[in-house]
Length: 116
Image (cartoon, rainbow, N blue to C red):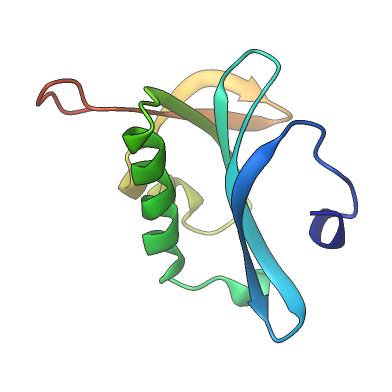
């Protein structure tokens, strides 16, 4: 994590890193914040962003669902082209909440056949 961000995440997290050769070009995962929310994150170097990243993000959402997670929150960086479209495709919905200048989005597990 330090190699990618230049800092350490204080909370325990679980995720994957993407590498090209020996260089880490991205990472994504989940952690629980101080409020007890499950927070998802995905960061890729700009030149490493590919449409195929969706399948890995979707796999992460399915993993959280299989563990009984009801909600996952994330934030949308509007500077990234099509970021909101990407989150919508994963099933996230925008909220009225904002953190660090970014809109918070939330994914909720389907309940007994209901759609999110």
